[in-house]
Image (cartoon, rainbow, N blue to C red):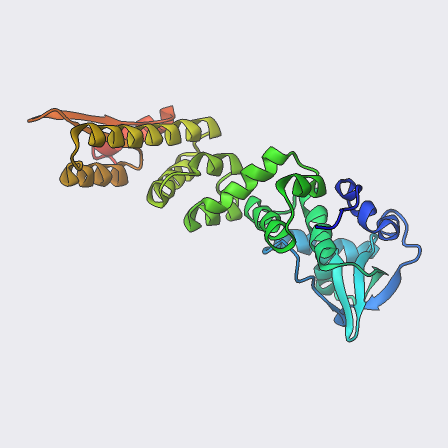
Length: 290
């Protein structure tokens, strides 16, 4: 792999110094380019754009114009957007026909890096979108986690933890993208079976469980799983399938982890809860008041 420029971690100015200068407080050197001659960046890591925020930006553009030029690359049939897709989209909403732009030539890798820098450093990406961008830098361009950390201006451990979010179940990833689940809540679920992730995530959202509570709940489930595996090995037999089915049925009904322990003819049912509000809800449910 070719030696990388040492300044990537400093952001836009390290990759395209002139573009970064022009995209600041001044529009000097920017061209007014027709919006219909510009196509979006195919390496844009953002999959969703907040419509309300775009509408606010469009109103600002109607009143004051586009204060920061976008960055584009010229091609045979027009221009490709490198950085500034929110301004590009909002300008269209505002009814403008042109946009100030700085024209530069960059590689595919730099296009992705620039889009990542622009969004991640502004905290505009969801954790899942960020994770996909990191993965693309690793898969398509052979970058290590250390190199990605430099580009994104993050610690290597942060990059590693973000990439692990891609191991979550699709349902949990959707909750994360929608903003109903925080990254801290989601990280607590990494490594659990998809079915466990799903009902725990629903519980976290419904009962507004704190991140600390989420970590405790996930730890309890992991501990229960390890205990079951240990007992299976010690007994040399499969667990009672009917007992496991009843435990899962109770968990679905109560929306919280449940342990059913058999002691022969009898046993114990242990119901977990992670907040006073959740305890009240479970009690009301058991009393038939919900």
